[in-house]
Every structure is written in C-alpha cells, then in structure tokens.
Image (cartoon, rainbow over the protein chains, first blue to last red):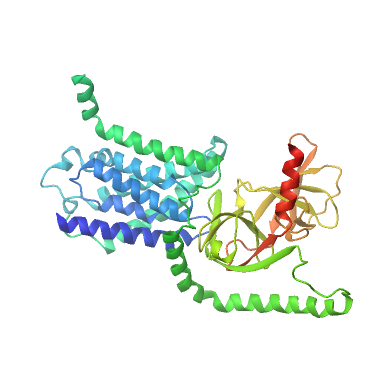
Length: 168
Length: 270
C-alpha cells in the first residue's frame, strides 16, 4: 500500500515535469501539444478512495496550469475525468470491474485502449471548449480536440506499454 | 435533518466534484476577463526556477543559430553607430534618453493557446516592472504583465487580451493590433479608416499613442486586407516579423517619461 503511494507521488512529479518541459513545447504541426499526463489517470489504482483521487487530480491539473499559465483549465478537465473514471471503466470493462480479482492483465488490449481513448477524449473536449469558450469557434475546438487527442492517445499508449505497472 | 445528511453522504463524491469544478470554473472565467492571476503564474519562484533549469539545458541546442542572429544584429547596430558619429551634433548622454533598453532571455515560450504568456529570466531585482514593452531582434513580442523577484511573465501579442497601438509606416493612420487566435504568424490590425490607401506588403509599426513602445518599432507587413462588416474600417492581416515559435533573446524597453504621461492623462480624465 505504502509502495503504491510512493509510486504515485513519483509519477505525479515526473509527469508534471515531462509535461511542462517537453510536451508543452512540442508544437507539432504548429499547434499540437499533447497532454501526456492523462496517462496518470490510466495508471492510478482502481480500488481507491474517490475523494482522494479527485483531490489528486485537481492538484495535478492545477500545477500544470500554473506552469503553462492556463489557470484552471487542466484542473477542470482532470477533475472531470477523475470523477467520470468509474463510469468509463464500467463501460469498457463490464460491470464487475471493481471485484477483487480484477486487474488490467485480464483485459484485452482493445478494452484498455478504449478506456484510455475515452479519458483523453473527455479531457480534451473540456480543455479546449473552456480554453476557447465560444460556440462560434466550434470547428476550431473539434479540430484541436481530434488532432491533439490522437497524438496524446498514441503517446499515452506508448508510455503505458513502456512503463507498464506490474502490480496493478 | 437525518435525511439531508444521508443525502449529502450518499452523493458526497458528486458534491466534491461540483466543488472542485466550481473552483476551476471560477478561475477559468476570471482568466478570460481579468489579468492573469497575481500569485499563480509561471513567474513565481518554483515554476520560474524549474523553467530556468529546463531552459539552461535546452538553450545549448540552438546556441549556434542564436549566436548568428546576435552577430547579425551587432553588425547592424555598429553600422548605425558608426554613421551616427558623423551626423549627430550633440554628444550621447544616457540620462537624456527617454527609452532604456535591457536584455533578457526567454525561459518559457508559448504560442498555441488563445492566451499566450511567455516567461523571461529577469525580474524585479533587475529593474523589470509591469507594462514594460518587450521586443525581439525582429519585431515586437508583448508587454510585461506580472513580475516576481527573478522572473517576469509577458503577455504576448498572440493573446486575445492584447491590444497594441500600431500604425502604417510613414503615415499617422493608427489602429489596434489584436489576435484572432487562428495563426501564430498573423495578427490583425483593426480600426484603420477605409479612406486610407493600403498596399499588400506595407510595413506596420508601433504607433506613438502608447507610452509602452517607442514609435516605429517594426511589427510586420500587410498580408491581406478587407473591409469590416460595417464597411467603414479595414480588417488587416499582418504577418509578424518575429518568428514567435523561435525566440530566445529579447529586449525590454522602459519609457522614463511613462509615469509622467500617465499621471497627466489620469488627471485630465478626472
């Protein structure tokens, strides 16, 4: 238990640093800055106190916001996916995902990628809608959500297979 | 009472979510209409030093290109200096100069979001304060917004809140420079009356109406223009001279007369 706490704290710090120092400066094709820190929500243990999970999500988002001067956009998006995660998991892994025996090992690759894709999609939709905050720019929002979303998804899948957690 | 408490307990996660979302929303909406938050921004000590450390490493990668650019600028300045020797009558006295210039390095650049702020490595200790103008070797960059001890954040021209006085070079027709967030190489100049003759390729420079930038600092060239909906003013797309994606060394400009001008103007309005 203590071990997972330390691992998660390390992930928290390392993901913030990689996000703000590397991925916020990527500017691929001029506007794509993927939010790889979303993979934190994929890695986070399943059987957790939801309140602490949401608090962590809020702090993670807020820290990244302070670094990138986008105050509270990341926090809003992160808290939302933290809140929606159980519902998304139920959708992807079936109703009994919170049983004792459940682990990511028993799931198929498609299920895991769908889970990650939904997290990324919701996060990006909220982030870009509130960043632009105008219905008139609907197409711009969609373009940013899908372009950035696909890059984020690819990077997150790479990250999750590179540093796959063994215990969860 | 019991039922209310039970209700709250049952939906405690939803309430917690609503609480966090509310805080985040308030912050987001504030950042749309007010200045950047005073305490949470990338010029603070922790965030500033982490960006500083990151930029220390990454700045080695384009040292060569940056050196070349600075040498070119030195050449240009020397040319001006040597020519000035012959045609200036008065000796240069730095206390008489209205504008003071100091250099700084960018430690965080940003140009993809609708409200871009960049962070520089000079702060209050170096004499930086709010509302100083920031230019690159090619054109303008923005205006200092928040200052901490060792760092400062700059509101870039690529920010929907940015509004800089600009004019067409060689004339006195002035307008406001804004950004429509679509392309980081293009900004928009509005409020130029339709009777002004325009040519694609004309140079746009800063106007003399603001006390932040000196007059005639280059901004960009006209790429395209058309009349606005009311058909009385032009909307002009201006292609920026500075490559906003590739900036390292910048210059801060301080107007020594600024306080006097502002004080006078505020007295006049009262």
